[in-house]
Amino acid sequence: MEVLKVSKTILIIEDDTEINHMLQILLGQQGYSTVSAFSGTEGILVHDGRIDLILLDLMLPGRSGEDIINELKQKHNVPVIVISAVHDVNKKVDLFSLGADDYVTKPFHNEELLARVGARLRNDVGSATPKTLTYQDIELNQENFSARCAGRSLELSRHEFGLLSLLMENPTRVCTKSMIYDRVWDYETSADSADDNTLNVHISKLRKKLKECNPDAEYIETVWGIGYRLKKS
Image (cartoon, rainbow, N blue to C red; front, side):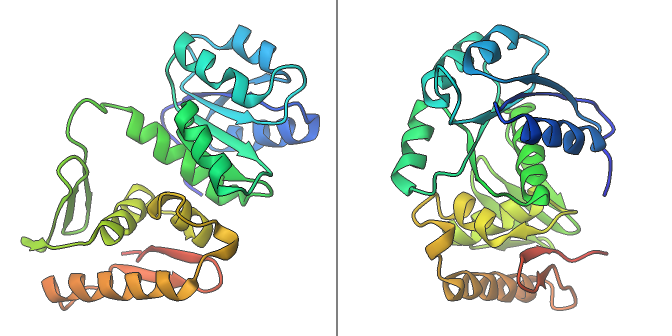
């Protein structure tokens, strides 16, 4: 796996010692610096200007994750990715209203967590300017929701645009099905009850539209049983 060239600092607020240590190792292997806290109160105390992103467990001793999201944001506004075993969709929606930026359900795949961390850190850089993603001859403007392929305009539905955007944000990683449904379908359904046929239909339509722009190229490949990724050159 490609190691990051620019070090970012991630605050891990997780009371389970083993999980906290595992996250330190996982993130460190990708070139991230980490700061660990084992309670909500400790997390607020150590959160400062050096922190670029927060991984926040909900079930913390003393003050819960929900209780401290807003306080963390007010102290230093960086992306907060919640990590929890809670699968309830309404609970996830409530967390977004409190200020969370993303949500990962335990147990999680390491690749998925790293992809979400990378995407949030990229989105947080220069967010005041229009965000344009490029991959081969595809251009995607996330501010005005326009897309082009091989110099031709792409007319995409909301979900098709979200799919292509997510894949292009993670050009070297597999986007798992749960990650796709959480991000692209805006938590309309949980990953546990997601209809694979719905996802397959949208991927098929997206592939067809890209093929109409450039018949000689294949942009999206299936990783059977896991999800999708951009086809390696």
